[in-house]
Amino acid sequence: DSGVTQTPKHLITATGQRVTLRCSPRSGDLSVYWYQQSLDQGLQFLIQYYNGEERAKGNILERFSAQQFPDLHSELNLSSLELGDSALYFCASSTRTAGAQETQYFGPGTRLLVL
Amino acid sequence: DAKTTQPPSMDCAEGRAANLPCNHSTISGNEYVYWYRQIHSQGPQYIIHGLKNNETNEMASLIITEDRKSSTLILPHATLRDTAVYYCIVKGNAGKSTFGDGTTLTVKP
Image 1 (cartoon, rainbow over the protein chains, first blue to last red):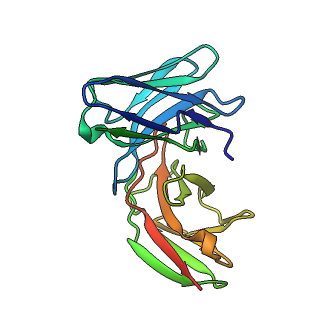
Image 2 (cartoon, chains in turn cyan, brown):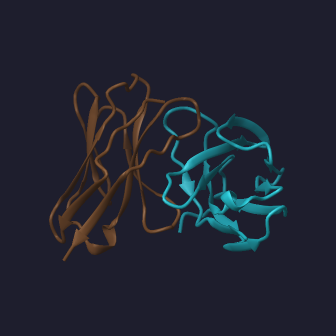
Image 3 (cartoon, rainbow over the protein chains, first blue to last red):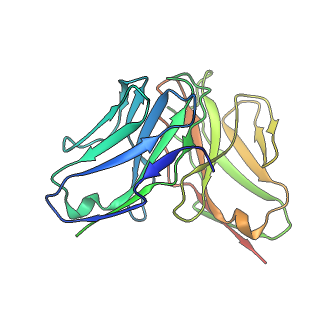
């Protein structure tokens, strides 16, 4: 158990809909990262927040957005969902905002299926 | 962050050492080498990291060549539960970690 929690574990929805994925980082961690892993593909970095502020952006679609709240939990919002958005979504947390020596601890993921 | 190259798959006999190589020839002086693994569709699990010295923890050992252009992750006594995809990542100051395709390690009885 990494200490990072994600809800829900599974989510089934229809195209065009909007969903929200939630992540609670490890106690004391200020940074939260979101990754997408489609079937048979590697982990794609989406976005990083540190203490409520966006710090790095990866290949995140404009239909997707995220935020980190004062209690440090984070939400990833996916809208106008398409079939291709079906994937595993992982959240990770770490103690430092940047710097090369920064270990990320991953949550169990949310499996999203868009029908 | 520097790009890494790993073999797509490897097999290892149960109880033997598994040696997983990684090439990172463009690594910069301040970039660390990290190893994670992902068992089936679970969240990636941190294994070990290092800068230039060899490192060992309860899970594995990390051997980094003197020129830092390659490294090897060693699982000393592989078990069936070590079957997973192993990712070698070079991490700089950008914050994000770029995961490649990794090496699928299959431990066989």
